[in-house]
Amino acid sequence: MTTWVNGERSDVIETSDRSLNYGDGIFTTLLVTQGQCQDLTAHLMRLQQGIKALSIAQIDYPKLATHLVLIAKDTTRGVIKVIVSRGSGLRGYSSVGCDSPNIIVTLNDYPAHYQSLQQTGINLGVSTVALGLNPLLAGLKHLNRLEQVLVRQQIDSEQWQDALVLDCQGFVVETSMANIFWVKDHVIYTPSLELAGVKGIMRDKVMTWLQQAGYEVNSGRYRLGSVISADEVFMTNCLMTIVAVNQIEDACYTQRTIFDLVTTKYLSELEA
Image (cartoon, rainbow, N blue to C red):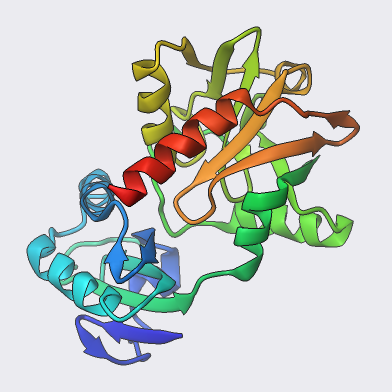
């Protein structure tokens, strides 16, 4: 892993930084292919939206974009993570005087098992770790990820590949690492993320593609049974892109109609 702090090669940050003390910040994770950052504009917009939502001081987005392009140019396939912390402050929750955000950028190798999942699909468990409801933070890719850490602990303990995650009222939200879609009688469903979860960039793209293709796409609060009884299930994020779900607990899914459609659309855009 190679790390930059505020544009300089470094892996050092002050212990007073609020990302360390409170998880006070926003992040995004970009796929790099053939020397290019995929969906760079969308990632920068998501950072900007998150920074505005948390009232963090604004950063120089053109400068950051230039930096990311330079980092990516010699990388065939990799992962760039951008963290924007509110910066350092005094002890306590107050953010008064924190007007110098820290920008941490890392470059990592692309996870080999993601390519395998794209080819073979994935099996999911159902996590018993429920997500809390918070409309102020829902949708944001903020640094407070302890719920996901607890979910991942269960996944590792049960030796699942990933798990479907519900909120504390029993509604489906996402998996530990991706947004989820399912198909029933040619209608596509995906959870609303107004109370919990992360609004993924690939999720938005897939919804747009499906609507352009004339499919009905419904976003709402759905119980687990709605997913289990589906004809087809797949999941999305910016690194794995689009992955078919083969199984959720004992329910199996072999239909790939919509998965094939959106995968073909993704590949065509990648080659354009």
